[in-house]
Amino acid sequence: MHNMKTKISLRTTAFAMLLAIFLTGFLTGCEDDDGGTTPAAATQTEMLVGNSWRVSRVATPDGQTLDRNRLNVTTQVLYDLDMQFKADKTVRAVDKNTKQVINGGTWELVDDNRAIDVNVTGFKGKFPIVELTRSRKLILRQQAPVDGRQSDINLEFDPVL
Image (cartoon, rainbow, N blue to C red; front, side, top):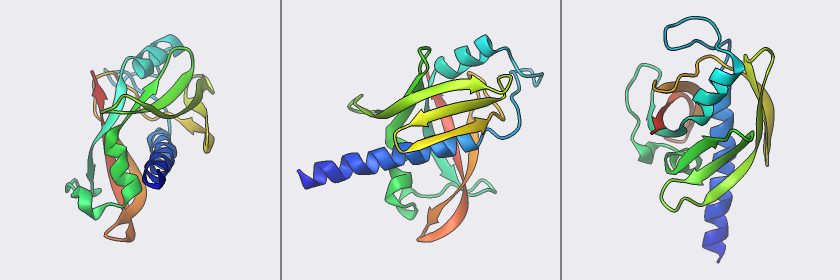
């Protein structure tokens, strides 16, 4: 039972970290697929809720893939979660294998659709949006332990279609 609680606790912590990483990557504005201006709220909402998002790769800032065994447990767990933003303004982290919801909360577009405000158990904040497209890979920079030392990493998300 202790192992189950530890696993759920790690996933809850990982969800909060993933959400923080995912949203802190949205820094200054949003472009549409053609590199234009910020889409309307309805379009952004459609793109955000149109897919789940999953970490596909963790890399150094210069693009070298980091082996999972070099990452801490919290970062490793991120590979196992799908982030789902729903049209009813809820967000949740779902185990990609069991489809069990690990954690959740609410979200809302704010600041003329240039930021997303999130309220999740263990995590709350308003995050500017850099890029949001339905079919592109999302790459976010984050500080996380690699080989036990804090390092800059890129978390790469693919839409789960």
